[in-house]
Image 1 (spheres, rainbow, N blue to C red):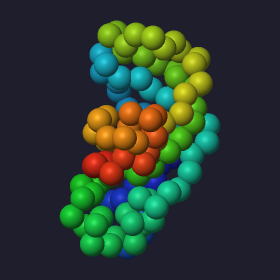
Image 2 (cartoon, rainbow, N blue to C red):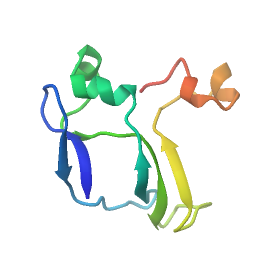
Image 3 (cartoon, rainbow, N blue to C red):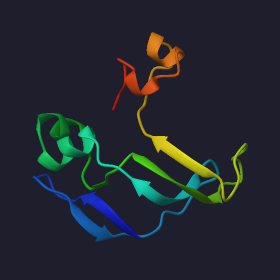
Length: 112
């Protein structure tokens, strides 16, 4: 599959062919239909101070997407193959005002 990869600790990203991930028992595999480039991706591309202290190399970038579930792990419940899903991959606190209001993407305590 094609993926944008931060392969080196320098400015830029590379479009590479990478292996389709093997899922674990708590994972799902999503076939991406649409994706977006956001501010985090720009930081990673520019290899600024934040990216240098935060991003492990190598890393496949991109955390805002929509697609269809094509495989589910044995312990996954509540979703099915063929379901349409979207994601925004922030790690949030779950307790602040924004998180409790369903606006987790605005969490002040977000880890990324």
